[in-house]
Length: 133
Image (cartoon, rainbow, N blue to C red; front, side, top):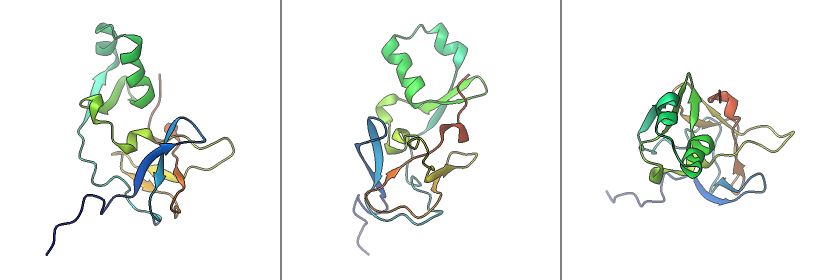
C-alpha cells in the first residue's frame, strides 16, 4: 500500500484574513464534527504566569504568550517552542455578528461546529477555551 502524501489528512492552510492578520482557511470541505488538527503532534506545555513574569520577557517575547497562549488558571498553554506554531494556533475569532465555525473540547481538540466550505476562514471564540486574567 502506498504511503500517504503530506497533504493528505490536511484540511487547512494559512492565508491573509479579512478578520485579523493571518487566518486559517479550509483547503477542502470539512464536515461537521471533524477533528481538524488531529494530526498536530506539537506538545503543549503550561507556563506559570508568575514564572513568565519572573523571566522579564521582552515585549516581543511577551506578545507570543498574549497572541497565541491558552490562558487558564494562572497558567498559559503554548507550544514547547514558539517555532512550533502550527496552523491551529492562528485561528481568529469571528467577525462581529458572525458565529464561530470551530469549537474546542476540554483537551483542546478543535472540531468543525458545522460543515465548513473550501476557502472559508475557520474561526473560534477564544472564551470557549481561554480566559485571560
